[in-house]
Length: 159
Image 1 (cartoon, rainbow, N blue to C red):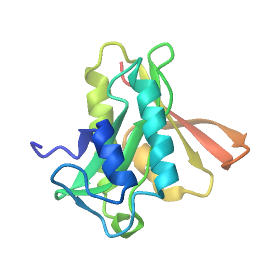
Image 2 (cartoon, rainbow, N blue to C red):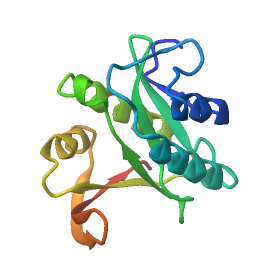
Image 3 (cartoon, rainbow, N blue to C red):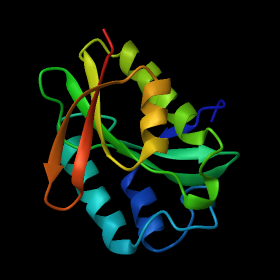
């Protein structure tokens, strides 16, 4: 693993997670990554994005334990990727998300085809906003989503 917190996912990783098993030789956090339906939805998105762009998603690993996922939420558009991420509730407030998103940003800055990363957070999710701000994202607007409600929109240049 070379100390990396983000590990590119495989279809087998998603199968294991949907079955409640730890992928590869990792352990699972004591709180689930998500219900099987959510894992299956994330696997479908990763497969769709992966047809056009790779990597499409990463396991977030801390001390050999899978604590959540980070995904590219849709195929890149004009050199911009949008990411979504989460951390197991029992592993929050430990800097894990900040370090993992920092690794995603570092990877993206080395990718010549990318020029920016975007993300969205619930207007009430201040910890996630702090993760983005720590990693150089700037709030660029707001929008409302049918399922997720009011969201803040974030942008970070990688060029």
